Image 1 (spheres, rainbow, N blue to C red):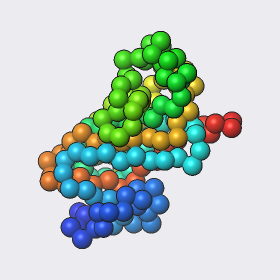
Image 2: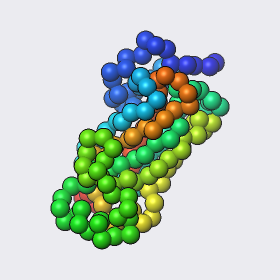
Image 3: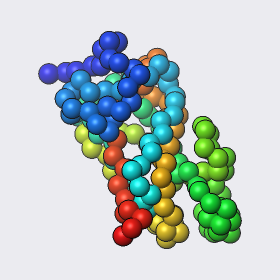
Length: 162
């Protein structure tokens, strides 16, 4: 069975990405080829990987994202100054959306042919031992539709207390 999100999906409820019912109809769609989504984590954590899911493998659907960036909101003057002196300083800038300053954790290319895609945070960022509370997903484009749809996103990491 092939599923394509219908125009009747509630486009105002991005919470389906993290708390959906895991059925093929649990998509979050927004109008346009690019946009941003922020996730506020329940506690600060060292982010180790990000996962994107689809309900099943799809070779090509124009509503799927193509390129995206994952950003972490930086908190604290000392943290910001330490990053400015580190090898990843070039990845720090004012965020493309609402958070400043932020650190670009990943540039990803979405592969619509895979049901689960895992994107590991680069080792040079992991070595900084940064803890984030807010993660920003900046979707740069999609595969050609006038709307973009996501099924499920997971952020994995080590809680600050560990």
